[in-house]
Figure 1 (spheres, rainbow, N blue to C red):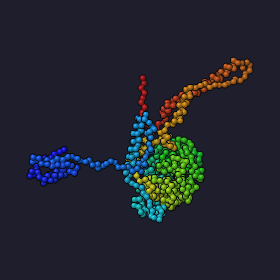
Figure 2 (figure 1 turned 60 degrees about the vertical axis):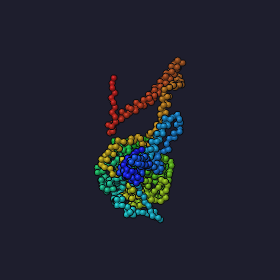
Figure 3 (figure 1 turned 60 degrees about the horizontal axis):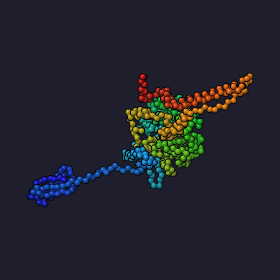
Length: 586
């Protein structure tokens, strides 16, 4: 309750009371206060003095009632599963139940925050729509270039090159392009600004090209060996261990250059150390169809018997073999998420497989001719080359690709193709050169600058290269299921425990030995017993000695592992390891 005292005019009539209220409202406005938020204002005259009584009842209006409600579809997109049922723990495990409850709350909070970040993704993917009664496949590249803006139209172009057939490859950030011709033509350039980095003739046939961890280095599989060049065309290395190579792949997180040869050999080479990790024969014949699964870094190879095999550097046998086609496989590709795999064969079929469960075929489509190349885009568009015709299909994973999304007829037979990352561009190489096609809705519109930045600076590229080397994943962690790395090898551990328990209590084996008969009095009862006893003791002694050695080997597993680590040769990154403290001598 507050009071204002003010001298009235003329003894405090009703007009004075009205004037006082107006003055009070003016006073509130001058102080920036809102009089409508105050209630129960009373004005009275007592002993010639006007007294105004009021009560403060300011209502706290909630301008911001809370955070915006997240769309349930986004929550489902970033969901990490149903969670743990807390009822299974019971009342006795109240502490564990409380911990699991807190953990589930943090997981739900992380899902909600991940869904809220969608508001920061300002760009949206494109789309091609046709008028009523027409199809999008009827729209040509000339029509698209006329309809789009100048910047996008400049991204669609054709290069007439006489040294084909060509192989091509984009960098992971989608900014640079390398071309390799069968007649020795090797060129690298920034295809957006059309700035040429290098153009040389290696004077040998080039079977495949590949970028390494940055756009500063590239590999070319030539007639005899694999060569490494920089972006100025200077030859850096000649890898004679990789001979007669037909296909190249680079694993960016493991810094491994993988190759397949004419004789059926697979090779993994560590780029940071320049050492060959492993090389072994597949015994499947010539391997010219190979791609990598970006989800688990496993190599997928297609063979002439219609099978697809998967290989890792940790095992000299295929970790999985699937019969995909009754006739030879012609092309394989895995989508960027690593969930789906597309295969084509001479049976004119395109089949979509679940790469996590290869025994299950999702969908299959019949083509008019056998496809020679197949590629996925970041938005799951599928491009297929049929001779000199390129067809792009939409919704192939869901099974709704009844008609082609876009169609293009090239000047020559298509030998290689790839979707440009973070761009609506499909690059195709032919016998006569290279063409860049505009495919609306093919690329991811929002890029992660920490993963692949198309506008990265010189200092940013250097810093990203150092971080990538420091966080390199060892090659022995490549498995078909990456989640097995975090699991305990329970059967092997149980076998070790059982073996230790058996070796602690060792029983002497019973030996039944019958000595042979000897002449000249050497086969008496006493002589036979001595010979029999000696053989028993010798065999039991050998058995106990072998059992003791096995027990010591099992019990000293930890010490052996430490000594093996000490015996390893020094590497480049050993200087970052913590130094061992010297033991004090008593």
